[in-house]
Length: 79
Image (cartoon, rainbow, N blue to C red):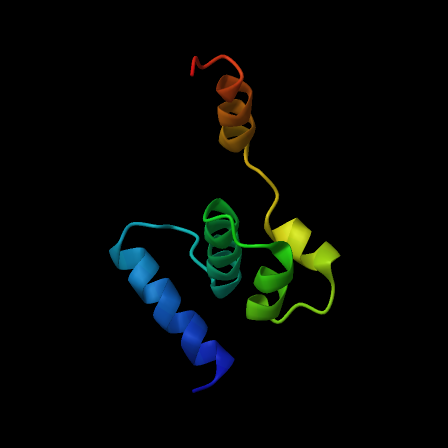
């Protein structure tokens, strides 16, 4: 299957799910971010994603505004 074929399939399913901008690259980001959320090390994520550099992996795994908000809220929680 060609890369264009894969893109068309992903867009088709994105359209059916009412996700307007679904691209293969977005799925890579989601894959990496889900691994970060599962506390997998960046080294392992880089290998799984096929990245040569941890810097590339870091860009894929940047925290969202919600991630930052959740982190700040942790210091206010009682044990």
